[in-house]
Image 1 (spheres, rainbow, N blue to C red):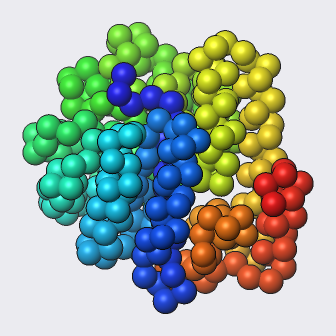
Image 2: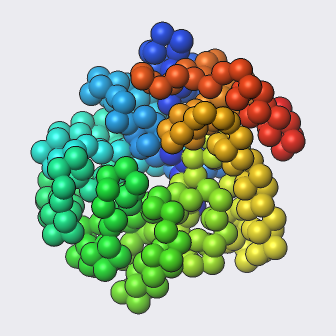
Length: 303
């Protein structure tokens, strides 16, 4: 299948004055591609999609497509609050040459599963690009039901699912139902710390934000999974779990600031990003928080 393996959700570097840092972005993209990732996902949560103007979205996709240059497929987030707004982003993704698009359920307005299903069907009617459903209930406030996802896969509406729900039980049930239906969906986990469990469930790959920091680890783990070397898969997962502590050793931070903020700080400390700047109104991590992240990186031989 075209979509499989390690597809990092790309972190977007900013300059100190909040412009896209193109040089750092190119460096980070090339670093992941050269490590052997199987694709790139831009304009997801880690890419700051909801913080971006339409102009910034276009700039991010244009740069990613130019740097990837056909070496790996590029999946583009078309995430927005309503179907009409998503369809506008779909047209831009098509224009810029995206290999696939990624959409959440619509959000802000309260909707149910029937509206969510119609949302995906309307996107499918509007494009020939493969569509991945992004299950992110903590941000869009509705869980994508497994039976709906499999039905949309069987009907050719969805090509796959990125599950970032953190609900490992529902993920297992999704992979079981998907296999029972003939595996119409390519199913990926976005849960960095239990990728080994997702592979045991039969996942087609992983979309780990932590792969921005250490892409080699996740690429090696995928290869070990493909080779059936479960001891190595588990060993590498333990390494990833230790590294993921960069998102929890900080104090006084929450959510996006703690998670993506830690990724950016790590990349800045490692010399991949020139700045750890965050999008307004989020502030970059400073002081003791940077020291705490640096200590984890040193313990994991990344600094």
